[in-house]
Amino acid sequence: MTDIRFLETILGDGQPHGPNGDGGGIGVEDEALDAYSRVITGVAEALAPSVTNLRVSRRMRGMQGEGGGSGVVITPDGFILTSAHVVEGVSRGSAAFSDGREFDLEIVGTDPLSDLAVVRAASTQLTPASLGDAARLRVGQLVVAIGNPLGFAGSVTAGVVSALGRSFPTRAGSVSRIVENVIQTDAALHPGNSGGALADSRARVVGINTAVVGPGIGQGIGLAVPINATTRGIVAALMTEGRFRRAYLGLAGGPRPLPPRLARELGRESGVEIVQVVEGSPAAAAGIRPEDLILDVDDTPIRGMDDMQRIMVGDTIGKRLAIRVFRNGQVVTVEAHPVELRT
Image (tube, rainbow, N blue to C red; front, side, top):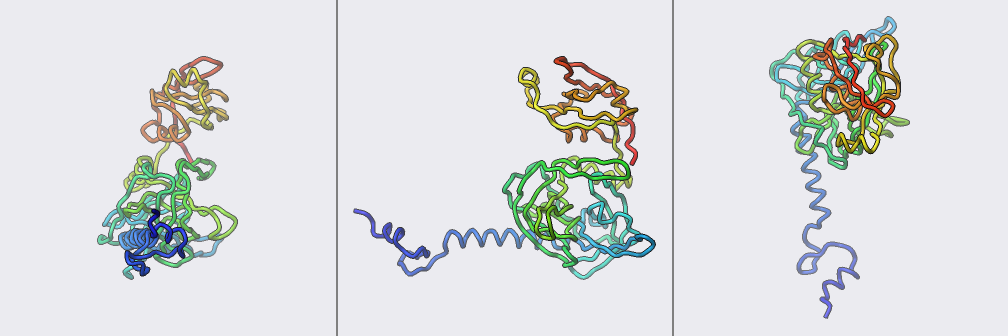
């Protein structure tokens, strides 16, 4: 005989019922919402002392302009990570914190090609954030954004990782570059969030919010530069040298599937197809041609342009690189000598 409780579940009013049928108890949805709220409030409380409101002044067309953004404290003695475009052309600025303290700041180093910058506040008693690893993120994972959108300090929004592996173009002078492995999120971002924290559920900063893409404020998608091994190296160089040196070959390309036989031999699916070689560049001198398919550089497998960019760092400048390419059905090796990228 069917238990009467099962019939009540099917025919009932959809409301949760206690063991005595009195409507008591906490539903599963309520428990989930409570858990979600605890995560968000926990992240907000942990990171609030580490996210600062940056107020900056820059000269534009002979006039003094005011602007702002966000920053994330990364050391107790004042180093703050932010977006390069937040402090571009800045003559002076300050960093304000949630406890009411405000300090003058100086620009330590900027790297427009990654849209990252390091500034330093005149304090030795700051609360640094914990940096995470964006390489461990998964699509659908909960993330929390903290910053100062439209000047509203300490604003918190939450969402999920909408996509990984996105890219967006950056420029410094005459040089353009694609920032790879950008995080896309649906956490609401607005102008002023740039330079602020994108954190995981354990309050580890996994990205620096950098852009809002869409037709209007609050109607687009948010992008964040990932915190990973590559960006940690950039940040370390900005802190110690004030700049990040890159090697330059003078080529442009994109990922392309390998021919099936070659893919089986190499045990991977893709390489980088060259679409342009700059005249007079180290790549041109090495004999690299459009439609070449780069397989590896100094025995390092190349699957996409992000693999190439990881190799093109300061230590590679002037170094001999053995580059294997697939050309006209054959694998050939060319030798290239990168020079320093000048912006």
